[in-house]
Structures are given as structure tokens and as C-alpha cells.
Image 1 (cartoon, helix red, strand yellow):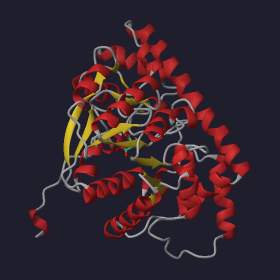
Image 2 (cartoon, helix red, strand yellow):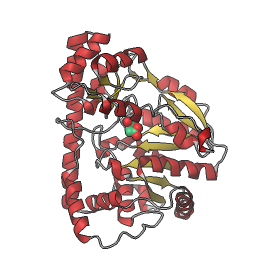
Image 3 (spheres, helix red, strand yellow):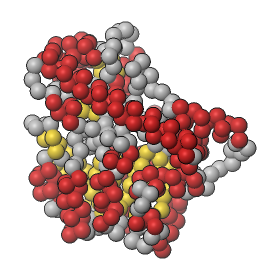
Image 4 (cartoon, protein in one colour):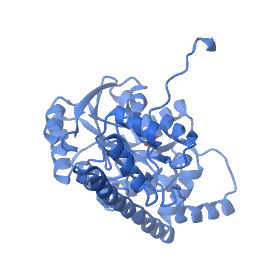
Length: 395
Ligand code: LMR
């Protein structure tokens, strides 16, 4: 029976990262998968997470299963992190969450809940969007519609087109939004534009589902949450897929949460029970280690302050790299790369063709996605000039 199976093409992101890993060229540059890398090209462990880990190792007395909803301290911490300490929805007790295996698990559990509530719901996704959104949300049987988002000519959000397409989203539909640091383009909505989306949702009755994988990687933890919090302040229901992969560097620990803002506390309890049941049938219960570390960081003043400081330094460095890359490309290639500096988070489209991206790989061992999405955090002082030279070579 297994002999019926043919090999599938490599994952469009992880496959390229693996190809770069296997490339023997000492000058190779990996700008593929979205992980934060420091000046040495390493993906570091936050000192606050190291400290939490030390104390966890010393104190942990059991590896018994967590409950399907996950760790209580983690859930409380993540709800506050996402919605803010002063959130009215939190105070009203109409928020619930379930710890999930990473942001992907949160997207999947969110999709399960949407499907349970409204099997015919359509999910509106931005064009372009993260390539895994389709398989993750579609695997529960939801149907997709796309809305225009990124304008390749201006390197910015085509907000008029977005609003015009979302006019088709109806009550019972889901609109998937990137909370900040849009993946793949890095072009985010302004607060004024979030306000317009909130008005559309109020008027048309669709439910926003916010993929919030990069909180704290754009401007800051609270600043990056401003649009999402505005939706929550205005709407009865919002679903959020939160991830600790990037902002706590817990990538391989698969630490995330599906956060549900519900109409009232009774409904929040019902949603939690449905989410627990969905988790049970998909993966039973979440992995503990990362969430226990995150819970300690969230709930300890000293560790929390240390983490926030480290995260702001990460954010500042990425923004500095954006500026350096812009200037390096402009001086090598001419043209205007100012957009790299105004975008947020790890990603940017360089505006190259798939053929040019392939030539960068083949001729220079500079790896980016075929869409020319780069992980800005893969740039450092040691490879900046080489990247600019390579891009100029294929332009
Ligand atoms: C990315 O887009 O590179 C990250 O979200 C990692 C992944 O799983 O694709």
C-alpha cells in the first residue's frame, strides 16, 4: 500500500533552508526560514529563557501529561501579553485560550473551532500570505477566498483593493489578518487602516482571525498589538493564533496559544471545551517544556523585565539591518529600496523574479524564496556587501 506513494516536492521554505545547509560554498547566505539570527549568524537562546530553564530543570518533579488546555500560568500570561493588562474583554471574563504546539497548532485549533461553529464559513486570506496558511486551515475543510493586499509596484499595502475585496466577506466568514510583521511582505496596516477593518467587521459581521506570530519583532510588544487590540475593543468575537517561537526564541519547543475573545463568559467556556476536544482528536495535549519556560518568564518580574529588554534589542537590531540593507542595495544596484526600511519584522520582498532568485542561489549561494522574500535577520555585517553584490549581479 505504501508503495503507491510518490515523493512530494520539498517545502517551499524549509526545503530551501535545507538546500542552503547542504551547500558547501563558505560564502553561502541563508535568508530563507524566518528565524532570528544574531551578528554571528546564530539563532540564540534568550538569557531570560536560559534562566527559566535552569530553574525549571532544578525544580521539575514530573513529566506527567499537561491538561489538553495546557499550562495555566502560560495561558494567563499569553492572554495578557496579547490583549494587554487593561483589556476590557479580559476583565469581563470573555477570553479563553488553549496552549498549542506553536502558532501552527493555534491556527489549526482555531480552524477546527471555526469549522465546528460554521462549517460553511469562508476564510479570506491576504494575497500574498504565508504558504502554510492554506494547508493548515484548509485541512479542516474550510473554503478560501483571497483579498488583495500587497502591491508589488509600490511595495506597500493596496488598502483600497483590500477593502473592496473584503466587501464580499459576510457574517459567518473569517478574515485572516496578520497582526504585525506581515509574512511574507513585511508591509503592515496602519492603526487607521485597522480602524477601517474593525468598522467593516462590525458592519458586515465577519470574524477576524489574527495570525500573531511576530508580536514584539516589529516595533514593540504593545505597539505591535495595537491593531489587534483595537479589533478586540470593538468586536464581540476575535480569534488569535499567538506564537512564542520568535519573540521568546522557542521555535523548536513548539509553544503557542489559540486565544478566543468571545461574546460572554459562558460562551468562552463552551469554546474552551470545544478547543480541548479538538486538541484531543488532533494531538491530545500540548508539549510542556516551552510553555513552562514562557510561563515563568511571563510571571516573574525580574525574568520578564530581562526578556523585554532582550526583545527590544532584537527588534532594534532588525530595524538597523533594514536600514543597512537598504543603503547597501541602493549603493550597489541603484534604484530605490526605501521600502525595506519602512516595513516591519523579519520579511521583505526584494522585488526580484523567481528566475533571479534562482540565479542568486545557483551563482552566489544566496538563498531566498522564489518570491524574493528574504529573512532580514539573516543579514549581518559580514555578509551585507556580498548580498548586495549578488543582487546587483542578477539585476
Ligand atoms: C517562515 O515563514 O519562514 C516561518 O514562519 C517558519 C515556517 O515555519 O515557515
